[in-house]
Image (cartoon, rainbow over all chains, first blue to last red; front, top):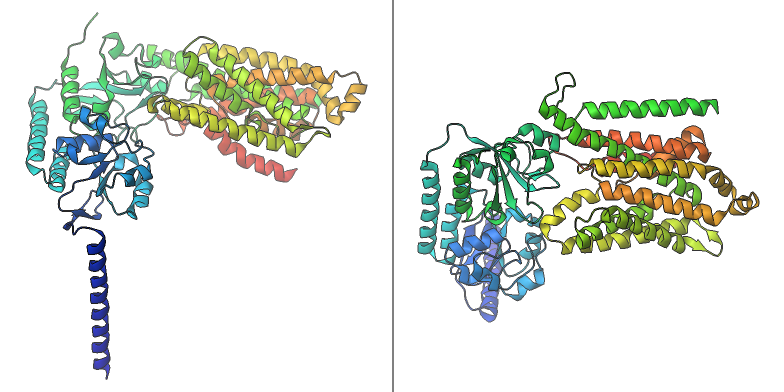
Length: 304
Length: 316
């Protein structure tokens, strides 16, 4: 008696499963052309269902746009943010809002199969709003130099452009290695990275730029400060007395803060501007940033 | 009057003590006895102008709050809550966007913004039946939110890098203190203390009722113009130098009234000193709590001010 009821239950269950599968298949056939799907894990460990060959993708961060282009799949991007301006071809792609506030309707309108979101944009809530749509959300968490080559290869797999992605990844790794083979100064130069002049924002412990400076042969004087991009006390800026000041280039950051006017860096003329995009976007151009920083750090003081 | 003298002496001593503490602590240790070149730069270029500016901003905002509360016979009249600070903030932002670094543009437009906001609130709150407490508060809410929306719109249009500094500044931030800013707010605070105290007798009479004040020979229209004008100058110079530091004009006069009663001849000048003490101490917390990082002082004054105000409201 007992056995039979279990059997009956099993049969019922099987019938329900089979039935719903049939319905599901029927629906899929009716609405979509059968697309071969696969499951890929993203950087948050979420299992994301993607078409085996992705043809329509949206990037919600300038760094990701650069990564996708470098991985040889720029032509699959059908939507990017208004900040996505590199490489030049990215400017012609449909804009779907900016990094902080992407426009969900504009995204759906370009019918993407996958939407790439960066952890740096803090769009977690937005990503969950997209979850209900037909497009998959793939989160990329690129924490600096060490992750770029690996993510280029991953993007190559996703887009089926593995060869070009592999070449880009190898080139990136070679450039990093070349910088690290260069002769280092005996004592690393003490560097302050200034993000904005009037309000003295700088980089802290959690910023990948801290590591970038370290690998380029310098040491960030604010490396111990908690957080990614803290606002630094001017008193501390005076006391830190950096040898080199790097200004990330932007209209509100054209010269060192007044508090730094007597620092070793200003007195010896070792104040340099570096393109803010190559510094701040965790993407393939970090190699450019690393090479530039390494060159600047080895430059002799102009002297007085 | 004797008790009042003691309180004045206490307030002056308190301000001296607050200034001394504020000058002695910071994100870096500076030894007064072994002064290095670096220590001198930290003290003279950074800490002293900031502490002095904080004192003047605190005095200005408390003066503006105390006199507006007396004039409008409304305990909730406060530059921040009435939208006057937001008017000044919008003026400062416009000066920055349209005129850039033109000397004096920011405080002048901040004053204009504060004045227009004050006038608008007053016109909205006035009715044939006279000034009514609820109308004034509602008018303040409307002006505040309206101006906030314009500020949000403006900062959204500015590009992200320029916006970053303003989010800090809008909350009230003393980190960009200069001696010029200090001199300007000092001039406003001294003029405000003298001018507003000189109107204190008239304000006392007006608190009883405008009819009675008129019978005692008070030129009501003139007093109103002086208070509104001076409050706009005080708020304008403060906001141009340090953004919208909230709650100072609200809780400081309230505490002073709890101690000395409602005689404006005492409340107005004492609020100036108490306001200076409050902001100097709040900014000391802002400078040191998470050093070498910084907090905006407005976050500290609101953090202390809002619960304290609820407490005061329940007591009275």
